[in-house]
Length: 233
Image 1 (spheres, one colour):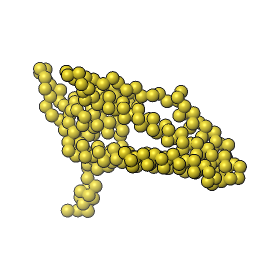
Image 2 (cartoon, rainbow, N blue to C red):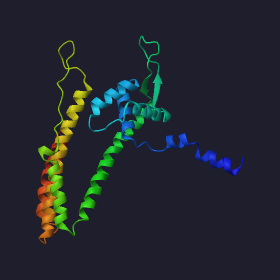
Image 3 (spheres, one colour):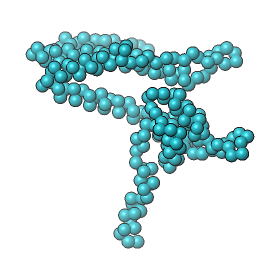
Image 4 (cartoon, one colour):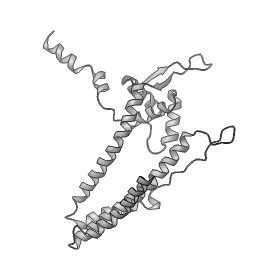
């Protein structure tokens, strides 16, 4: 076999290379999560996507779902299953493969590290303004304004559904609402606390008191208390 053939075998075809590359589309991952939750056909997926992700993620249209499904199938993350119903041509449904479920779980774990990297990046970039403390304080004020009640919208929690016995039934949207509401509450509190610490550090730097230990002590005290509560739980 010639040298050119060896190169072709090693590199693979274009679809193979795309399948091997990391999947970065947030829409693709979101659709995979919906399919893991419940197998669906394309149009139903589009409706569920719009209802659940609302203004967090958006689709270019129903055709966007078909493009994403083709990408997921190409990576063996989902598979088609025969449709059911009375129509002459039942719509094919899509369900997640074992590989799809495994990669989705790994992707979720990776998002935590990604959030930490983003926060570290913001801290480093903000620190770059320390030679222009007025600009740094203006950026900080803008960040604080984003956390005011007018800058964010509380996440509504839907009323729990009831089963035939009157007991609360399993409702993914209800659970999602509770998770988002609690994450929002805790994240806002932690972010406000951190921004207050940054403000005290910047003001200390402006007054020639860089590394003010009392500011650090005020920040660490509630964090230690929170850690004790978690250990006790």
